[in-house]
Length: 87
Image (cartoon, rainbow, N blue to C red):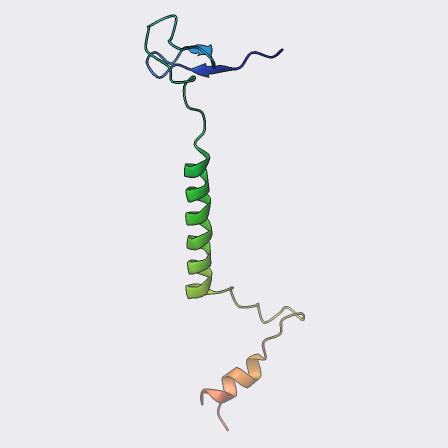
């Protein structure tokens, strides 16, 4: 049987998860000290994904360098369409 230890909310020393009160400082532990709040982790992940999607929508991917043969952008077509090419 494995014993689970959690930090005490009063003194931060490790106590058994099933302890009713900390044996060191006497602070009541409601079924042990709370561990990681998965709701807060979920909200943090959701905010990170939303920020990433917003930045991608606003700025998009960086353009390919002209020297890259795999680049799908036609730089000559773009230069002709804006009128900056001399005829």
